[in-house]
Image 1 (cartoon, rainbow, N blue to C red):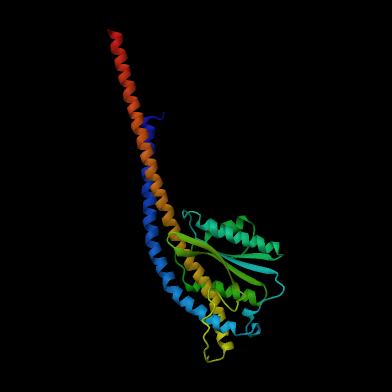
Image 2 (cartoon, rainbow, N blue to C red):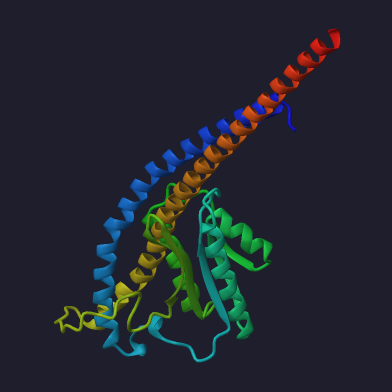
Length: 288
């Protein structure tokens, strides 16, 4: 049986761990409020944007804009993987990485070359370990990004698609559903289909000025950048929600360990007291 000193040391160590996990839970909660507010403010704009673009693209021919053209022969696919820069958020990053690498293997099985565009250190590390080609990597930015970064990355993807360096672009990120649910999503952003994103269009007819072709030339590149930005916002909110849940679970586990160690401490102390009493009684009997 462990000594009283050993058990007491373990109890102190677990209490310090509990303080750390509780503090990290509070920090994640504060960051989550900000990240959740950003994605909730952005979603109405994104939804209306997708609806309008769906109406435009559904009535347009693929030849109107090169971003709508589906290539018969595909050689290279670009996968944008958006993860967090830090860990301690449960299986959140692992789920996104698993989905992205599974997609990469499927594309390779189809005879396509795979190139990765990594946003977030965790995804970058996993892709590098899997020995895939990394074209672009952004790290230590998930706590301070804005639309400028999404616009820059979106522009690089568009240019690579237009010059046939990439024939398809897929973005993998963690979609924020609720506090307790974050789902890995892999969505094709290039070529843009007639029903982009989650929208199928409103079915309404509009009179456009200038022409539909002119509007598509302006809106289609922006759609790609909006998709990248939405993936980053969703991943940011999902990361903090997952970390908050993980730290809450860790705090409860610390409480359970403290209770178990306290019980062990009391049992050990009681055993020591009983042993001392037996020694005293034995010595007393020997003196009679």
